[in-house]
Picture 1 (cartoon, rainbow over the protein chains, first blue to last red):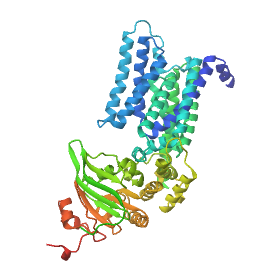
Picture 2 (tube, chains in turn brown, red):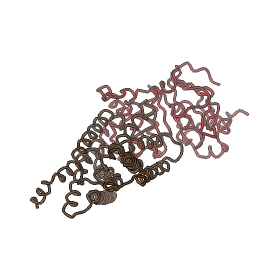
Picture 3 (cartoon, each protein chain N blue to C red):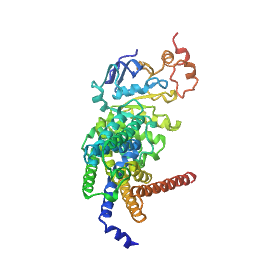
Amino acid sequence: MIETFVSALQYDFMRNALTAGFLVSIACGIIGTYVVVKRIVFVSGGIAHAAYGGIGMSYFFGWNPVAGAIIFSLVSAFGMGWVQRRTKERADSIIGVMWALGMAIGIIFLDRTPGYKADLMSYLFGSILAVPSSDLWLMVVLDLVIILLVALFFKELLGVAFDEQYAVISNVPVDWIYMILMAMIGFSVVMLMRVVGLIMVIALLTTPASISAMFFDDLKKIMVSASLLGMLFTTIGLFLSFFLNLTSGASIILVAGIAYTLSLLWQTSRKKIQAHA
Amino acid sequence: MNEKNTNPIIIEMKNIWAGYEYESVLEDINFEVYQGDFVGLIGPNGGGKTTLIKVLLGLVKPYRGSVTIKGLPVEEGRKYLGYVPQLVEFDHQFPIRVWDVVEMGRLGARGLLRRFTTVDHQKVEGALRAVEMLDFFRRPVGELSGGQRQRVYIARALASDPELLILDEPTSNVDPQMSNSIFGLLHKLNETISILLITHDMSAISSYTKTIGCINRNLHYHGEKELTTEMIEATYQCPVDLIAHGLPHRVLPSHHEVKE
């Protein structure tokens, strides 16, 4: 048993994949926590899907797709953050439209791009087994940026997440803090795109943090626990996909989804027991 | 009109008109709050109570008139205000402990890129002690009762060292006993701090408030202790219905006092 695991680790791609899973889980744990407690899962989904527009444009203009995705997800993150904060219209409808529009732009650009688009599917469904070392370094940098920003603005981020109105009254620069949060979601989305693909980004962003929020009452603890859970899910998912020859992103999400369901069941039964006691 | 108030002025609103796109919610509001006041404003739902508070806090810009807090424009002057929102505005599932909620009261004082200091910790501790919730400081807010939660948000407001406490419906979603204990607390706090509260619930305006006003688009407030029938009639359409509620404390003058 252990020997088979060790043999799997002899492959470069497997080691890279595991490292990528660990690195992504850090961003996921920290940013996912904000996404979950502030109830902006839908916005995050919108940013993830709109990033596909950046992929399409990159193919068309011959840029690096990851760079295109970063730019596009940042632009859409700021756009959606602005909509969420400012508009008097129904914010969720506008975000829904931006979500679909981003994808449509990507598809149209790809239509107009001649030639065979081999690794296109990898952006949609993830390709953690094909992560090059250069991407790992990008992930390290993005992780560091996220950790630094959260450490610098922790009290403001908590204030804005918990009670935006009170933060405004306290003269906290709420718009800036909100945009920093949106940018960090954008960074996380791009990292996650490699691992589970744009379509399943929301799942990995939310499940570890949601599970952790059931067990802890403190933001920092939830972040640490969510990061560890993310590492656990990506590792188990990776080995499943390696040994059973399944799509890696989907395997990871399946593991996360099962863990989430079990935690939910456990929590509801615990509450019932408490109610009867 | 009663005699001129000689205490220092905290809030001064002059000819305020405010509202949303096609409808004014507040019309020609003139309103003053002085140091030491304990003002209760009542009015029906949708009567502009919350808008009035939002104007005071700088969350809604009036389209006519001026507001000053201790002579300063609201964006600067609001640091002297301690705001206690309605309980329903909070997400009770948010994973946060009592201490961290109250510490948010120090956000304005501490500023960006600065850590909370021992001074902040002392203020938070003092605020929690003032509302008798210090023993609960490690508890998640979601596990507290409505009354306890209300006390925590009062503590958050107190932690910012305000001169005026503003409360939006402090006793809604709180059982009557708890409501009394919160008024008891406010009464005690009023020894050192001014208080303005709004509510749609007549019975919540207890004898603890020093002055009472009515608000429904227009404000009827003359710095007096009792509601006059004119004020009630101007605010609510049906005064009889109101009196029939059976108030725990008499806020209306008794029958023979009413002038013809």
